Image (tube, rainbow over all chains, first blue to last red; front, side, top):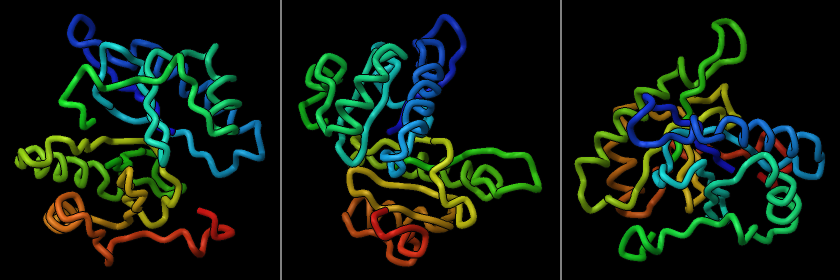
Length: 104
Length: 104
């Protein structure tokens, strides 16, 4: 699972680094590290994922499921429902349907 | 495509940030940006991917293909063969077979 922690100068395009990306990354890392059964799940910070205005952004592979706007209070659901149960957390899933030609 | 640019203090565990990760990321970004047909390919820096001793590490999703030890001179093959043609560049593909129980 990749979580954007991109920083940008204040006042321009928003950046996940100022929208809770680092806090989401830290909370997810702690939660996954406390679960031995999730030893094969990697939680990794990354640079820009694209939909900056809806961040913090994250993407789970190999599932190909994108999340936007999640915070530390969502971590339990992300871990229990998606990373453990394989069911994406619908209220947090990000759709690119309105952003491009539908291929994304 | 995620490319690790993780930095670490010199002298400890190796880090892709000192093994050419940033240079690989920059070269891939430039190559992909020059190819309008690859508009839907994102090249993104990331933190640690794991196999630090063989870095710089990279992973292509949704394919789930990992690369290790690639450099700027490999970018043309990565772009032409894999990102365009869908055929992983065999000489650079990283296998986890010797690192865990075979599930990775």
